[in-house]
Figure 1 (cartoon, rainbow, N blue to C red):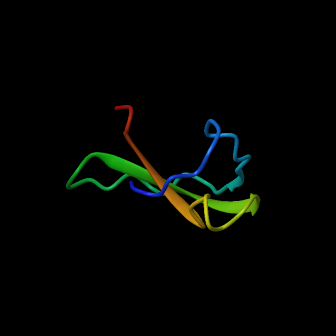
Figure 2 (cartoon, helix red, strand yellow):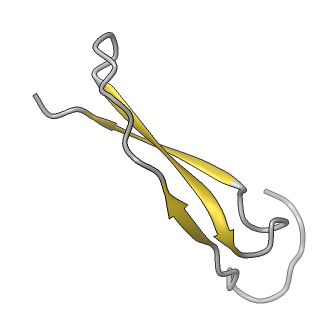
Length: 56
């Protein structure tokens, strides 16, 4: 994703994990949002969304 930062990817990004959402019956997927708790917001995403299939 561009940029010539020296060194390996040493950024520490720690996230607060939210609760899993209810299962969406149309897609059979539930989502969870992570919010950045500790880290540089230039190198860490402020929020991340994780998706996974629901268990039947």
